[in-house]
Length: 139
Image 1 (cartoon, helix red, strand yellow):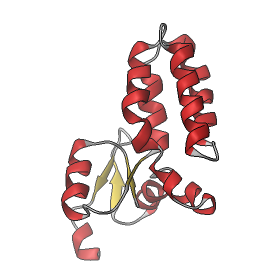
Image 2 (cartoon, one colour):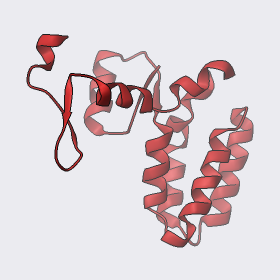
Image 3 (cartoon, rainbow, N blue to C red):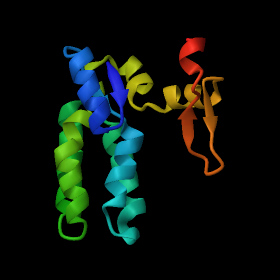
């Protein structure tokens, strides 16, 4: 399983290089994308609702929680609800795995942390992470 955010370039590359490997949309990035589309006064509540959704034990339970969120917020956070509707399946691909493995594939935070701490990257003055020009020689 490959976990990443929903960047078009990443999705295109994954589809070409690993066409049969399931793709998991990073739940951390999904929460951020989702809540950014909602009015500020609803963001904390929606974030908590998504955490509940992502902690469901079964897809049937997750679909019920999704449907409840969509019903409760449809009128006040239409754009966020559209995002949830369109991104739900890709954010829940991890449910294909045994419950004991899901937490390891839910987000891309582990690989981002590894890249941040490695000698293969540097952080600009603005805090943006960039690969070093010499990174390919170190690999």
